[in-house]
Image (cartoon, rainbow, N blue to C red):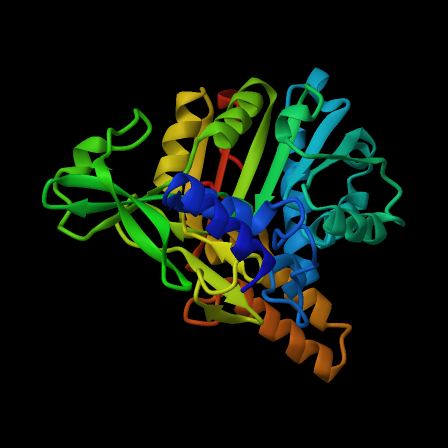
Length: 363
C-alpha cells in the first residue's frame, strides 16, 4: 500500500466514496505523494514519452507556428508578448522552440516566457534545460497568475492530466462514479443519489445513452480563462490525445514504465490520464468569444507545417543511423496505428476572431 493510498483510504472512511476527479487530483498533485510532484516521469527511464521528446522537429515547428501567429497580431500587440506553456515537462519543447525562432529575431526579442508548472522537481529540470536559451523565464502555479497582455498559449499533453469526472447510466438515471473501499482494495463504486447536470454537460445527449454507459467531463475553468485571454489579444494551441466529438466510454488509464497499469492499484506511483473531449473544449472556448480552429489530427497538422521537408533537411547532413532515427521519429509523430501519434492526437487552436485562419488549419 502506497503512502498516498493510506491517506485516500482515510479520507474515504471519513467522508464516503471519493469522486474520480478528486482521486485523480490527489494521485497527480498531492503536495507530498503526488506523481508529478516527486519525480521526472518522462523519457526512456520514466513512464511515458511526449512528442517533444520524440524529436526536435516537433518543438521547432511549434515555435515557427507561434512566430507566424505573432506576425498576424495587430502591430501594437506585437510588443512584450506573453509566450506561455502549460505543463512544460522537461522544458524540451520550449528549448527547441526558442532555438527555432532565432530566425525570426523580432519575435524572439518580443516574447516573455511564462511556464505554468506545479511540480518543483520539474521546474528545476526546466531551469536546467532552458539555462542557455538567453530568455528570461518566469514560473507560475496557475495561468491566472500570468501577467495580462497579448498572449500565445501552448498546451501539449496538458488537458489529459486534468482531473476528470465520471458518471454511469443506470435504469433510474445517471449516478456519479466514485472510488470506495472493498476489503484491502480501492474499487470503483456508484453513488446512490441521482445526478443533477450542470449547464456545461450536454444533458440532451445523455438521455439516449445505453445502460452502463460512462460519461466523462472536466471542469471548464482553465479552458475558459485561456479562451477569454486570447479572444482579447492572442491565440492558444492545444495538442492532446482524445476524441473530436463527445461520446461515452471510460478512458481513465494509468501508465507505469511505458505500460498500462491498474489506475487504483498504486496511487501516486503511476501517471493517470483520460482522453480529451475536443468538442467540449470547442464549445467552452467559443462561449468566451474565441474563434476556434480544428480539431485536426496531429499528423495532418505537422505535415501542413512542413515536418516532412524538415525531416528531409535534417537527413541530408545525418549519418545512416541518424537518418534512420529521423524516419522513425517522423513516423511516430505523424502516422496512425498503435505506435503512432498522428491520428489519436488532435490539434485545436482558438484565437482573436480577427486573426483569420491560423497556420496549419487552412481550409
